[in-house]
Structure formats: structure tokens, C-alpha cells
Amino acid sequence: MKVFKFGGASVKDADSVKNVSEVLKIAGCENCFLVISAMGKTTNHLEEVVEAYFKNENYAEKIETIQKNHLEISHTLFEENNPIFTEIELFFSDIIAFLRRNKSPNYNYVYDQIVGCGELISTKIVNAYLQSIGLNSKWLDIRDYIKTDSTYREGKVDWKITEQNFKKLELNSIYVSQGFLGSDNNYMTVTLGREGSDYTAAIVAYSLDAESVTIWKDVPGVLNADPRYFKDTQLLKLISYREAVELAYYGASVIHPKTLKPLENKEIPFYIKSFLNPKEEGTIVKKGQKLEPLIPCYIQKKNQILVEISSKDFSFMAEEHLGEIFEKLAELSIKVSLIQTSALCLSLCLEDKFNNINTFVEELQNTYNFEIINNVTLYTVRHFDKKAQLKVTEGKNVLLEQIIKENLQIVIQE
Image (tube, rainbow, N blue to C red):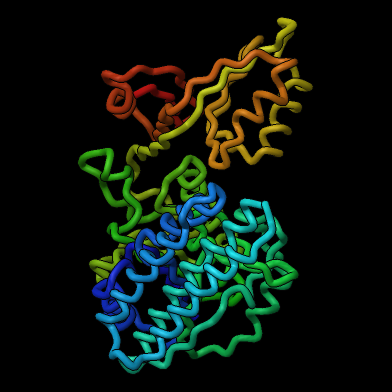
């Protein structure tokens, strides 16, 4: 079985949904599992619903706008009597009903129950369309298969149960299911982390011993830099699992960091291809492949926080200090993107997607001094040379620079 993942951009409107069927005709879908994201920016809009709910603002109006968008897409794809319209209305009625009866103050729990609906709705629409053009596709609720703990927004997969669940599937079918989602022992929705649909595809492929995984993007494959920020980008044709893990770790947005390990464990080939030009080769990630071509790769991470930490008693930054600091960072789910130490100071570039930096400082401020610079940008250049270094730093305010083997990391205030 092949696993295909289609992201939000590939199903953002009616023409995009139709294009998915064209991609399937070209790539072949006789024995295929489709993992599909929410349509367009639906996840962002549902996040706004959750924000409005917790601020006691008018969330119903936002829900109505999202529903209208999905109905408009469906009106282009289907005849008026298609049952998909009733299903869409039921989904959005359920969202409103959940928010009205919810008593939980747990933001992350509510987030997962609401935001996860985007994938459920989009896959219903795509599956209905594929059936309408004669493909015998089957809709699956991925939450019945991927089982997790109850860590809302960052669910940890129970691999044993998940693999057992997928072994029950019949092969030689076309399945349409959701990315990003799993469920805990109480069948509450648990999301796998933002942009987690790629990870879902890897979980499915691992559990089914799939032939391959293909991620369909609006770019020709993995480029050596984000074309939004760099000119003259080049396609990376071949990447090893190890190289791909490095790129993902440093923040290459085209590959989800968790995606690669399950695929590497079973040596499942991983393709990144363009849904706009599906006949092009794209990028392939395989065991033992060297980077081709071997050129500098630029990774940019915005909205980072540069923190300098020193002990109030002017003591060395010893192991017990580092242990205490990193334990607190892990507890608050603050990601460390760069570490640099001196005798008296620890410099960290942090990613704080759960807005816990103030709590971090408050809980350690009796022991440490903090200097914080918000909204910095971290550049990582793999396989850098002098020209690449100059390309990133020229004319910019460099706050910190670090070289480890073939990796150059620079924190810049823009």
C-alpha cells in the first residue's frame, strides 16, 4: 500500500479538490491510503474560534463563516441533493453544541476537540467527491486507529495498539482519512502537534508496512531554502534519512520533525512532490543517500526568543544549573533551538509556542538573572561556506553566532 498526504493548500478550494483526483490518476491509487489536512486556512480559523471562546467573545459568527466557506466549495463540487451538505451542517452544529455544554477550563483539551474538526470535514468532502467521479474510496476516522495518551496538542502515540488497529484494514482499497488526529483511551480527540499531518502519514505507513509515502506540496520538492525569503533556490533531488532529520530538526518547514523516524525504522522511501506538477520527480528521502546536489541549505525560524541566563551569586554555570534550567524548559514545553555556554552565562534561542516564557522566568528568577530579546530570527545554514555565511549576515544585526562542524547558526535582530 502507498500512503499519500495532501496538505491544506492542496484542498483549499473546489478546483484543488478536483486536482487531487487528477494527481491520483497520474500517480495510481488502486491500493492507497490518503491522509488529508483541513482545507486551506481552516485550522487557523478554528484556532480563532477557540481564542474567542476563552475570551467570551462571539465565536458563533466565526464558526458560521467557516461553515459558509465549506458549503461554497461543496456547491461547486456536488449536486444540491448530495448528502454531504447535511453532514457539513451537522459537523458545525456539533462544534457549537460542544462549546455550549463544555465545562472544562483546559484550553488544550478544548483546542483539540474544536480544531480537529477541520480534518474531519475536509475528508468527508474529498471522499464524497472521489466517490462522485467513480472511485470506490472509503472514509475512515483516523481516531479509531491512531491511539495516543491524553497530552492534548502534542499527543504521544501508543505504537503497539496503533499498529494492531491498522493490521485489521483490508488492502487493495482506497482509504480517505485525516491527518493531525488521534484519540486517547476515552476516545477524546488528541492532536499530534501543529503541522502533524506528515507525521500521521508516517504513522500509517509504519503500521501498514507501506511501499512508500508521498507528501504532495505546492513546491517541486525539498528546496535548499524557503523561496519566500531566499532567491535562486535549488531542488534537493536526493536526501538521506540522516540529512532529512537534521534539516527537520533545525526547522525546515517542508518536513515535519517527527515524520522521519518511523519511516527510517522500516526503510520506507519518502517522496516530496508537487501536486501542481505530479509527473516531476521531486525529492526522494532514502537510507544512505548523499545530499544531491551538495550545496548550502538555509533554514530560517522567525519569532524566536534570545535569553541570556546567569547565576545571581556569580557562580559558574555548572551541571546542576543546566539541569534545573532544562528541566523547567521541558516542563513548560519551550523548545530550545540553540545553546551556547560560557563560564558565567547560558545563551538560549527559544521557541515558545505555548506562551510560557514568562512563567519560566518567574519560577527561576530568585536564582538567576535574565536578559531577554523577543522576536529574533534564527538562521541555520547546513554545509555552509564563506559565501553562504555572508549571504545571511550582510547588513544585519548579529546577536549570536555559532559553528558546529558543518552547521552555522546565527541569531539576528531584524
